[in-house]
Length: 301
Image (cartoon, rainbow, N blue to C red):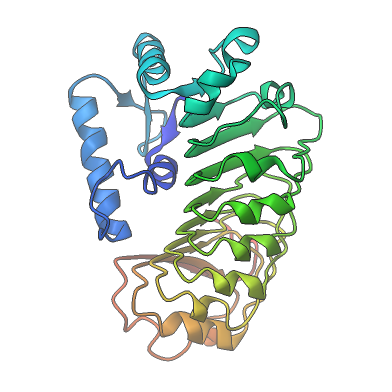
């Protein structure tokens, strides 16, 4: 990931990679474990305090060494690898377990025929250029083991039909992406973490209710998100954390009632226009953390 990142963003990417150990950990327990690991690395001077309290940075020298070890010992490909020699070495790519790129143009030089990564578990690509980020329809056919997928594009982004072939996908992040239609995401039945922060999504459609393993849903600051269909959230029995701050959602009474009845929910963030919309006894359930703003949207912080 980029340097000076937040622990919460890091969590979304590692919680599905068996790094934290313990398959039965709750989201909160896994977060606590990650915070402890980050603190340990800071105490060892391998990480340092970031620009904000929840962020951290890594010294450039340590980062370079880490990237080198990741490539040589764990078959991790990043932008420091030579495009002509290493990226086009099909033998090495077949052993590749993780890809992390801050420049999506490298991928555009390779796909679809040269990016054959059957052991790939982690795919992180940022497209910050002005060109469109076009993904071929059959792109995900050659990476069946992916557990974590992050696609960020400041320009238009359309998810290809082959996305539903990622039957092992557990984390999907489309933060800061110009994506509007997320219906196909409903086919990713093993998904545990879905993050759409600052995306152009307009609605959480009924298909999302098929994500019965979902434990964390983050749609903060989606400025165009106005609709959460009824009977969607109530069909997500494993949901532990829901973040809906900064969205102009036109809440329906029945949707808020669904939130009230959640037994697993421990963290909740949302904005509503009128406190009369909150169901009676809404705060009777035990929330480990909640942040609810009441008033006209957009809220003034």
